[in-house]
Amino acid sequence: MSQQLIDDFGRTVDYVRISVTDRCDFRCVYCMAEEMTFLPREDIMSIEEIELLSRAFTELGVRRIRLTGGEPLVRRGLVDHLANIGNLPGLEELLITTNGSQLVRYSNALKQAGVTRLNVSLDSLRPERFKAMTRNGNINKVLAGIDAAKKAGFNHIKINAVVMKGNNEDEVLDLLEYAREHELDITYIEEMPLGNIDSHDRALSFCSSDEVMAMIKSRYALHPMTQKTAGPSRYYQMVDSPVRVGFISPHSHNFCGDCNRVRVTVEGRLLLCLGNEHSVDLLPIMRAVPGAIEPVKQAIIDAMPLKPERHYFDLNAEPKILRFMNTTGG
Ligand code: SAM
Ligand code: SF4
View (cartoon, rainbow, N blue to C red):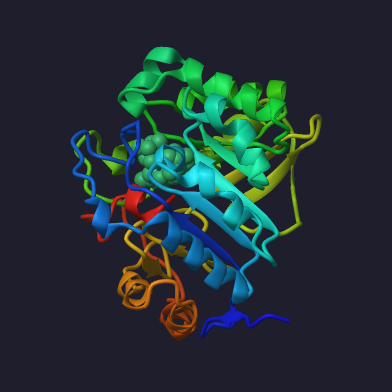
C-alpha cells in the first residue's frame, strides 16, 4: 500500500490537476484577457519535470491525474512523452481537459498513450458566437475533433460549458441536444472570478446552476446520482438517455467539503485550493537535484496541512485571485 496524502480536515487527496502550459490557441472571454503575456520557457516546468511530478504523486497514492492548462495539446513534446505518465504504476485514470481544436490530429496518439477520458470545452454551437466567446476559435474544428476522439475509441467524453447570461444561456438546451445526439456527458459551469478581465462584468453575466437546471427540467426529467465522482461536479442522470448532466457550482453549492484535489500550476506551484493562494513552490525543489524524487515527495507531504477548509468567491468584490485560469489549470 503506497503512502496516502491526507489533509488536516481528514480529506484524502488522490486527484491532481497539472497545468502543462499557460499558452492557448483560444482566448475565451471568461478565462483570459485579449492581450496575454505568457511565461518564459525557463519559468515553466519541462516535460521531464511534469513526468517526475506525476510519478511523485502516484507514489503518494494519487490515482487520477488531469492534464490541463492553457491548452495542453499545444504544449510541444507533451503528446510524444505522454505514455510515460499514462503507464505509471498505480495510476487509474489519465484525463485531459482540452478545447478540442487539436483533437483531429492527436486523438489516436492520446488513446495510445493511455489517456482514459477527455473533457472538451464547448460553450456555443453557433459559429459566430463561438468565435466571439473564444475570440478566435473555429467551431467546426472542435466538432470534428470530438468526432475524431469518438472514432479513436474515447467513451464518456464530457462537454464543459461555462454559462453566461447575455451570452450563451439561451443555448443550454441546444448544447444538451448536441450531447444527447452524440452520447456525450455534459457539465454546466458557473463562471469563477479568476484573474482580472475587462470583457464583461462577471456579476452581471453570472448564471447559477439552479437557473440552468430549471431550463433543463422544463424539457427533460433528471435523477440525482448518488454515486460519488472524482471531481467537483454534481451529476444527474437523464431519465430517457444514457447522458449524464453535471453542474459545477462554486458559488451556489460549495463543493469544498469532500475536495480530494490539489493542483500544480504551470510554474510548478502546488496549489492546495483553487480559490485560495495557499501554495508551495515545487520548481526550485525539482531543480535543486534534477531527477531526485524523494525531496519532491517530501515537499508534497509537508504541504498537506496548508490545504484550507474551503474557498469564498464574491463576484461583486475585486477578484482576490489574480492568477488566470490558464496558469492555474482549469
Ligand atoms: N484549454 C482547455 C479547455 O478549455 O478545456 C483546458 C484549460 S481551461 C482553463 C479548463 C476549463 O476551465 C474549461 O472548461 C473552461 O471553460 C474553464 N474555465 C476557464 N476560466 C473559467 C472561469 N473563469 N470560470 C469557470 N470556468 C472557467
Ligand atoms: Fe484556452 Fe481553455 Fe482558457 Fe479557453 S478556457 S482560453 S481554451 S485555456
